[in-house]
Length: 382
Ligand SMILES: Nc1ncnc2c1ncn2[C@@H]1O[C@H](COP(=O)(O)OP(=O)(O)OP(=O)(O)O)[C@@H](O)[C@H]1O
View 1 (spheres, rainbow, N blue to C red):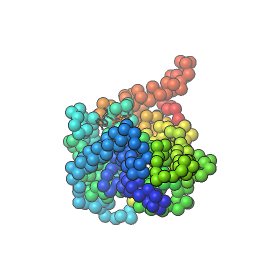
View 2: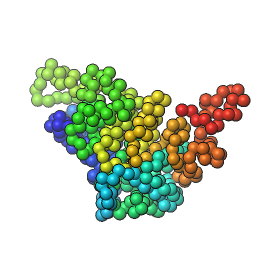
View 3: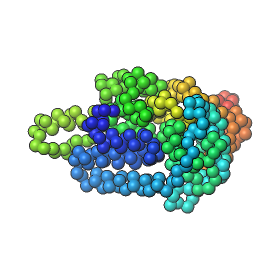
View 4: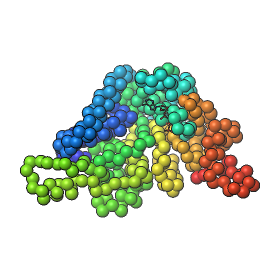
């Protein structure tokens, strides 16, 4: 962290703010990441293209817009957790007749949703694209508040808690599994904002848990590999010679990229870093395995199961496999409504939306032989 703090103070500041989640939410990550990179680039006068400048201004406007939303959100005054801070237990989360529409829109994306997740339960949310799964997760840590209805945490309204406290107790792994233009070390370390200088041992534990250790090990600079650094192609500083400039470019210009699956493994490692930091009672992961191969998916799932302790976890997934099979409860969303809930066997027996979605996936694995296909409905591909 010291390297970043000394050499790139603005970027360091921006990333620490993002991950501390004190003032802003995880939902602002993408916007802030882009803004931070743009601010950084501007400070270093790396690019003057008009398109780039326009994007910088747009990003800055987006950040201010987001801050405006945040400022309207009333903070609570109850500390979280209420009593025993050392208690290692999961959070109870309850939606009571929750309705939600995005600011400036008229159509509700969540309608009359009610469910209760008990401490330590593993819940999976499924549903077709646009059914409201990610929107529901955005309400968990008050990126937005419901338009109507109520969310309760450990029996009290979510709005009654200090926002900072309740966000600190949650780890949210977002769908876009972003990698940041920093070293791999920092990409993982950012997961634990309270731990400024994690040891190599802590980092390697998180990498292993996230399934990112093997690909990092193969890179020549390992954890010191810098991902997609700031572009210096139009750099002109103070009279450096071409040779000096070339050297600077060679040092700083993009050298390493990661695949979608590797980037998702890094994001998972960052989440394990956060889980290891203590104080987390709730984990939500939005399609944590969407870019992973089946082996990677199985391993990530196994380690999450192993290391989650008593934490309450919520996963969103489109895949019917390990997550859905072992979930305590599956919530099925359709057009913003909760149409079914229960475990895998119950929902298969119910023969509704869950079974319909399940069968579409299972169909791809069923032999054209009709006698085989008739036995396939209760065996999700895994
Ligand atoms: N920021 C936003 N502003 C306005 N509408 C939005 C916003 N984000 C999502 N929506 C709309 O809300 C609805 C639900 O979207 P959401 O992302 O929650 O669905 P989802 O079930 O997670 O979809 P997917 O499986 O594609 O990730 C969609 O109609 C989407 O267009």
